[in-house]
Image (tube, rainbow over all chains, first blue to last red):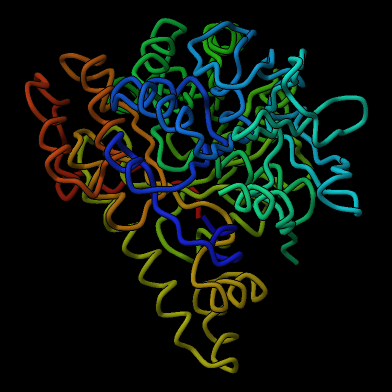
Length: 172
Length: 295
C-alpha cells in the first residue's frame, strides 16, 4: 500500500469477492499462504480471483501470493489457484533465522541489480513452457510471468525500489 | 542509535507479514493445529496460558523445547515462543531451536528486574510488551522488531489493552505536534532515546509494527483494538479457555480481518458459547498484575 501510494496509484483493500469487482488489477502480498487460503474459502475469493484472472486482468503475487498462484505446491502440498504453471516449494530456505536480503537481476526491467528481501520464502522448482523468467537471484528464478499473471518469491513491497510495481501497473 | 539495517529489515519484514492477523497462544501441537486451521497467522508457544499461570502461580519459564519442536513440526505458520524478561540464555536457546519470533514477555516470571535483553545481536526477531510510548521506544532501542500492548494477560478483560493502546497512539499524535527544541525535554520525560523520539515525531508512527495483546476474549474485543490502531492481535487465554476454542478462534480471526464492518463482527459473535470468565483488573492487588513486570 505504501509502495502504491509512493507511485501514485489508487488502491483499495480487497476483503471480499464484491470488492474485487471494483478493481482493475489485484496484488496478493506476502503473508502466510495457509492463513490466506482460510480467508479465501471463508469469503469465496478463490473462484472470484480465478474469474478475475480469466478475464485477462493482471494479478501479482509476492511470496505467499506467488504460492497461491502456483499450479503445484510442496512442503506441504495445499490448495492453490493454479493460475501460473510453476512448481513451488514453501519455506524452502528454512525458517525466519534463514531469511535474507540478496541481490538479483531483472535484465528486461532494470539495468541495476535489485535488492530482494526473502522472508521464509519459497523457491520455484519448475517453470512451465509458457512461463517467462523475468528475474534471477543467483541460479534461482525469482520473478516469473505468464501473460497477465506475475509472481515474485521475494518482497518488492518491503524495499524502496519501485521497478517491479511499476512494471506490474503498466500491465493494466 | 536506532538503525534500519539489513537484519532489522528482515525482522520487521516478518512482522509486516502478520499485520491484520491473529497470533494465538498454544501449549501443545494439537492446539497449534486447531489455531492454524482456524486461520491464525502465527502461534505463540508457552508452557501454560496466562490464565493458568495466574491461577496456579509458581515460576513461569520458557516452554519445554520438546513441545516447541512438536509445535514447529505440526504447523507451517511462524512459531513464536516466550522467554523471561532479561533471560538472554532462554532467548539464545529459542533462537538455536529456530523459533521465528521471541517474545520477551511479562507473562513469564522475570529473570532480571533491571535489564531487558539486548536484542540487536540476535538473528531471531523479538516482540516486547509496552504500556506507553516511552516503554515501547526503550524496547525498540534495545532491538525489538515488534511492539505489543501488555494489557493484562490472562484477565479476559480488555480494559488494560485499551489503556495501553490509547496511551501509545495518543503520545505519538502529541509528539508530531512538538517543535524541534521540545523533543529533548520530551525524550527526558518519556525516558526514551532521543533519536527514536525524533523518528516518531517525524513519521507519526512507531518504526516497527504495533500489535495488541492482553485481554482479548471476543470478536468485538478484536475489532475494538484494531479500530484503536492495533495492526494485529495476540489472543492468549481467550481461545483455549473458552467453551468452544475452534469456533471462537475462527470468529476472532474473521472479526480481525473485517474489524471495520460491524455486520460481519456481529455474525462472528453469534452462537459462540461462553467466553472465558474475566477478572476485574481494578480489584486486583498490585502484586497480581503482570503488566508492571519490566519497565
